[in-house]
Image (tube, rainbow, N blue to C red; front, side):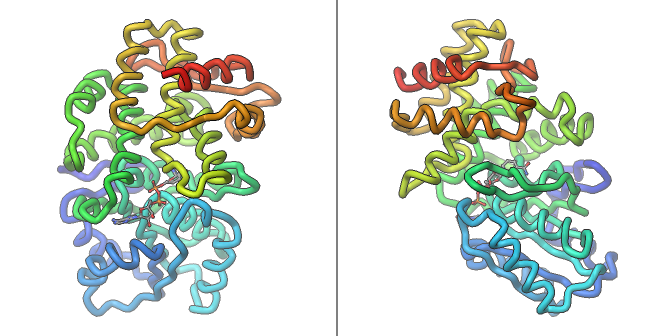
Length: 351
Ligand SMILES: NC(=O)c1ccc[n+]([C@@H]2O[C@H](COP(=O)([O-])OP(=O)(O)OC[C@H]3O[C@@H](n4cnc5c(N)ncnc54)[C@H](O)[C@@H]3O)[C@@H](O)[C@H]2O)c1
């Protein structure tokens, strides 16, 4: 499995942790920092450290969870980098899921005007999506990823073994972004995924998803056009995710929220973008088979609308969605009214 070439860096799959060691050797870094959360510190760090042998590093750990992907935790990490004497020739290794890679990438891209960072994604979601493409950032005031930068990692090292300790709910979360890759760009991949719902998707499927995302990113790194296709499911999905974070004790995972978003936005695609009813039914049936139903109550609609209006993808007051005209074909920049979005939520509620 050859490394995938992205925007000036490689995504390694084969012997990826050995590749990490060579990368560090060649980098001539003054200091190495590893950022984990409390779970990846426990489940993933030992394997990485065993490969580093006696190379020295400083460990920085944050508390796991989307609720901690915020500027306060960045300040904590920046302070630790200062206390540990990080300079411009330091390397930050982000070892974790999308929360660690998004936050760590942002911290590195802004510390001393930018230090090198690499990602070792340890969730399925971060392997197939978050660790590749150069979007870094944190949430603020209940708006997802509103503060951030486009900064590419220096390399990404994907090791399938990390998925063995990942809870099944987190595997399903990552599957949502894989399904999205099929829906927006690759009908035959969607066909394969929908017929092969397994406990842990194999490495070849992870590789395929990274390839789809990478092709989009290579063509449009700063989301002026094609990259908006990756936002399918995310207008409604991000709003539902934030609502759940703020209101539910056992809140939705990112992928569970995106799964709801993909159902709503497929319905909008049927209404506005020429998606056929049969294809809508197929998408709904695959997603509802995989993900538990979430109770969206009528009282939450106004709050969801307010969240969708604050989505960073909008221009002016208009709510901008990415829709599908068929499986594998996207239409970007589709303006949806609040009432249309409410109708899509009613469709989801009625399933
Ligand atoms: N930058 C991007 O392009 C991009 C794309 C998609 C999603 N995202 C972001 O990614 C985030 C979601 O990422 P996520 O789903 O990886 O969530 P996460 O980072 O919160 O990880 C999920 C849970 O799994 C735990 N975990 C991680 N690796 C583990 C392992 N190997 N074994 C056991 N437990 C492990 C974590 O501690 C956490 O509790 C969201 O903030 C989302 O906005 C970013």
